[in-house]
Amino acid sequence: MAENLQRQSINRPASRVLAVLLPLISVCYPLLWYWGRERGLFGWLALAMAAVWILRAWWAPTGGQRAVAAVVAVFFAAAWLLNQPAAMYWYPVGMSGLMLLLFGGSLFTRQSLIERLARLREPDLPAAAVAYTRRVTQVWCAFFVFNGGVAAALVLAQAWQAWAWYTGVLAYVLMGVLFVLEWLCRRRLRHVHGAAEGH
Image 1: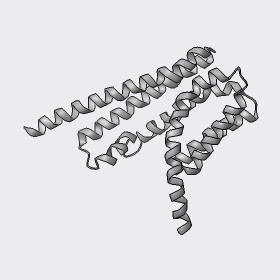
Image 2: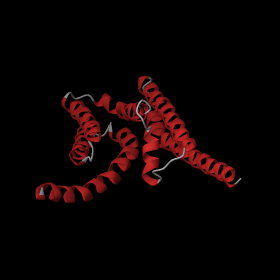
Image 3: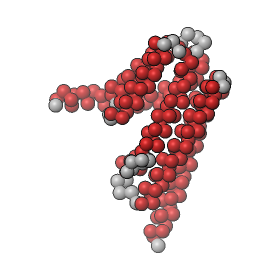
Image 4: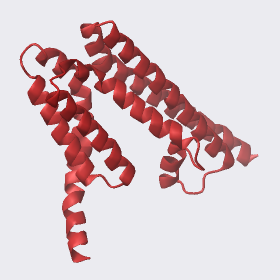
């Protein structure tokens, strides 16, 4: 018991570091790989990515997160062991696929992923909010299908510069736009329902 508590206390700051490090790596990865592919960085980058995801698997708080992190770590380790630098281009495609499975899979459960996140802040969600969170989850599923499809098409077309700019810049701009639009819609929904309850 004491050992488990000690491990949790050690894991907590490490998890926080990885929570910041992984998104940063994901953002930088396409441009870093595009720049480093002709400079002999394949092995270093593949091993570094595998190591980071192994750490994520080790410190992940849930079994599902551990499984996802382990799959990604194996992907990079296999790319390095089999000397397949072309596989590195498929990382953004794979991440979109994993996110689609995560969001889409939740639609077949009692609560969608967005609803679960919303209930962390507001446990007693009204029926309208539950329906809204389900629609938002569906919108994100559509985005991941689109995003993964574009990234895959660019890989198949061997349009490496376009791949780097789309997966490393434009995809995150689109995500930001989607976040802002959802926030505006949510504010509008709260205003409408607040006005309705006032009457």
